[in-house]
Structures are given as structure tokens and as C-alpha cells.
Length: 469
Ligand SMILES: *Cc1c(COP(=O)(O)O)cnc(C)c1O
Image (tube, rainbow, N blue to C red; front, side, top):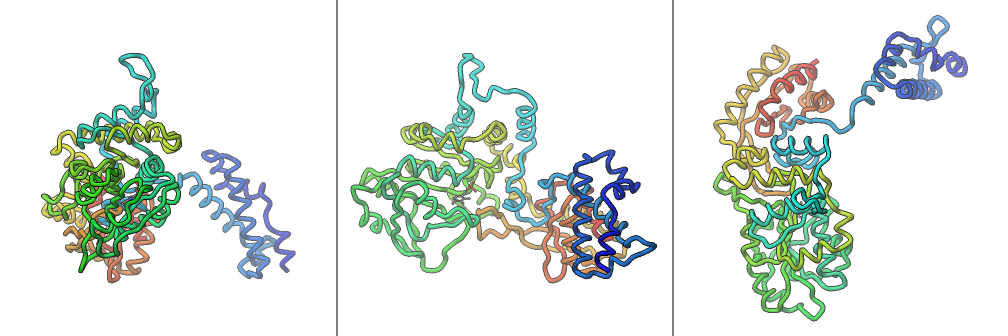
């Protein structure tokens, strides 16, 4: 019986002659269509061999042609779509690492577009006609904005920390408080980055308490620097005493040792005026007398993925000469996006409106409520009697390893589907086009409007209509 069924399986050519499959050849490469047919046939073969009775014979043919055609078309369609694509973020997590962290300002997007579609002066000084530096425009803006002497930008903040340690402490000791041995996103851990840089980690203090004297006790001839790591994605609460950057700078001066601060997120604007928790700004950290400060370009700064290094010129100059810098250098898209994002910060009011991350974090509740009621009305119309759509208040998170304890009051659209569960609706939206990411709470689907752009409402409504079916 199995051999009989296998023998009756259609050939690739037979499937190709099927009308729907043949039509697919008009808009997809032949190799892709043939590959999809082979895959569908292979699955059918496995199914027959495992004794699946679904593959019964109908009129001398196994009743699987329809299924093979269906699978082929579905596979061809899905392979034509890039894997990486747009997602509507309805989670309310502003810096969602899985969803690409910070979206770019429109001015930055435009700059990237101009630079990638054409040639550019990436490494040419148009004034002199001589070779220029890709870092020059960023260095000027960063020193102006932060008050630091010099700046360098690399691929991400993990690379920035690695470069700083490898340049300033290879073969020597670096002292860090036990309360600051952070892990970020599962793959960046201070002890491991330290090992990679060739520096030796010296831990001091306890998880919850570290004092300046803890550093003084272990400083020796082989100490290269004192490292301060901002605990950007956790807080130790209760009986705690963490060393401040200022205290570390004092100890550093006593022993003539440089102080490096890994700020993690790094903000240029104090957002505590807008109801967010206070966090040290980049300017304050430079002002405290640190020698080197590093932070991400695509966390709260709201620019492109990058590791920004600012500080004393003598150290930055040494980093620029480190061969590692060439291996972790930024490309022209990053230069373009970051330059224009940083320019927006020259006018704080403008930055708060134009940098999406800042705008989403500071949007007033009244606007969120307004947005939520607009979205709810739209979704109610789409749902009809198929789902209950209501408004509620909830909390959004900053995300992306920043302000871990901040809970921002927000307005959400709450959906209870009539026929399916909230998780099923969540999955249908996630698999839809465009994909929509919401969160499920007590068998209801929550869509937080804080992270949904105004222009996305119609798209979301379309995706919602398809998901309800
Ligand atoms: C996020 C973070 C990093 C890593 O930055 P990436 O830009 O993601 O490489 C390093 N240190 C701290 C403290 C962070 O918060």
C-alpha cells in the first residue's frame, strides 16, 4: 500500500502544470517554486511512510495534489517576503530589544536614505579635498553636547566597553564593585567582556554595599583603572550603599588612576521633569570628572545602534589607534542616522518632539487617552459583534535595559474575542501582515497606544480584521 501511494505521487512537472502553481512562476523565480514543490513532495513522502491514511487513493491518484499545491503556494509566498520586516509595537515597551529598540526620527531616516542611495563624503573632507574621518561630524556634535574633550563611535556599547578596556587595561587590573557586575541581554557580562579585553577583573565590596575604602585596599602597581557600571537593567533595594561616580573619581585622583563609566543607556536630557525616575545624564557623568564614558546609540538616545565613547583626548586618541577600532567601526548608515539624531539634541524642545523614543516617553496621559479612544472606535467598527473592545488604564515600561523600575501610566485598548482566546488572537496578530505585538493579561489582549504611531492605526485595524477571521 505504501509503495503504491509513493509511486502515485505526482512528479514536479505535474505539479508545475497545475494552474495556480503555473501562475506563481510569473512573479517568483522558477528555482523557488520548484524548491517549494520538492519540499511539499518530501513532506508527503514522509507522511505516507509513517502510515498516514490521509494519503488515500482517489481515482488512481493519491488525494494529496490539492495539499501539495496549497503548501507550495504558501511556501512560495512566504519565501518572497523578507524575514526581517516591520512590526507594530503595541506592547507599550518603548525600547523593546526584540523589536529593534529605538525607531529613528524622520530626519535621520531621510539622511540614511540620501547616503545609501548615492555616493557620499564618508571619508573625504570636501573643503580641502583630502582624506577625511568618518568620525569627524559625530565627534564635533558629541563634544558640543556633552562637554567632553573628544569622542569616538563604534558598533555598539558592548564593543565600546571592550575597546576602552583593551586599550587602557590590557594585561593589568580593573576594579569593579560586586554590585555592578551586570549582564545585559544574556550575552554581555562585565566579567566576560573583561576577560575578552585581556584585563583582569578585581571585584570589591559586597552585592549590596561598596565603599571607597574597598577600592583603596586593593589598588596596587598593576591597577590600570577604576570601572563604574551603571546598573541599567536592575536595582538593588533595601540596605544598600553603592559607590557613586563622584566617589570613584576622588579615589582615582588620589592614586592617579583613570575612571571609566559604562552608562549603558545614556541620556542627554534629564527626563525626571516628565515624571520619569532620575538617572544620571551623560553631561553629569562627564562633569563629575570621569575620564571615559560609554553608552548606546539606540537606547534612550533614540538613534542608530552604536557605542558612543567620550572623554579625555589622550585616551580617545589611543583608542583610535587600536586595531580593534577598525574591526568594530560603524558604517555610513550609522554615521548618517546618528549625526542627524544628535543634531536634533542641539535644541532640547525639538529633540523631545522629533526623537520618537523621547516623544513616546514624555507623551501626556490626556493624549494617550485620546489616542486609545480613537483606536478603540476603529477596532470596534472592525470587530462588530466578534469581540468586545474596551478602554482601560495600565502601565508601560521603558525597556531596553533602561530605567528598570519605571512604570509609566498609560491608556490601553482591551480586546476580548468572542470565539477564540486572547492568546489565539495574539498569535494571529503576531503572524499577520503587518505583524502586531500586543500583550495578554487575564485572557484579554491589551494594545498599549504609547508605542503605536498615529499613522499605524489603519494598518493595525486591517491586521485586526484578518486576525479575527
Ligand atoms: C545596554 C548596555 C550595554 C550594551 O550595550 P549595547 O549597545 O547593547 O551593546 C552595556 N552596558 C550597560 C550598562 C548597558 O545597559
